[in-house]
Image (cartoon, rainbow, N blue to C red; front, side, top):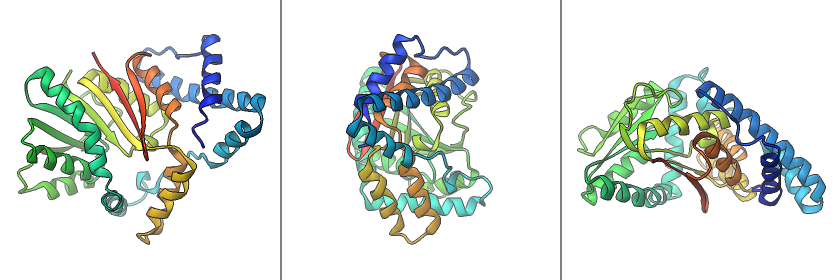
Length: 300
């Protein structure tokens, strides 16, 4: 439930036949705006299709509309002191450890890293966007070091305290990882093909469709191989399960963020639409690796 694939594919075919998709854009400002607008058009068309199909299709669409929210997580609210937001990010890391998500993420990423290594015959350069306090980057770096695999990770975030915490944690560990401040929507400071793989984990739902499209398009300018986004799978089960697990830490703000996040996860088809808008029709795939959705966009 909440993937709405039947009505979604019919809606997208309708919009393709009307020459509404994919949107045309010339720069990142136009890409962000046109992607946001098209996702709204798509959801409205899907609702109309669901009404025509009736029955369970319409019921699921109504539930999806009731559940979905554009509210911002508290950890993304710049009005809240950075230290308080950092505590929420740390709580998320504890949750990931409890649910054994980092090993799952690493299993997803390692085949791509191996392929890049075999292709280039050199150290693979990986950039993580929105890395928070560095949990995944550190876990991946530890696994790469254990396997003696030639790769290096750069974690990045726009929040200075997150980078400070990440650098504090990695000090003295001799891991192939470093951290830097970076605006994921403005990567001009990076050189062309400076990295091989750009990743983001458990963050795609924090961004609007247009923002995510901009991240993908810019990744294509600065990565040789791929953009990989890992996030929660949009479903009624996770809609209940994520806030429940978040609530176990007895941190009200984190529990509320868990509820908001679960309501914002993108469906597989929405991720595919965003990727096609940013990078073209034949360069991406979306996979369900329960409880995760994995978006892979290939470059060159």
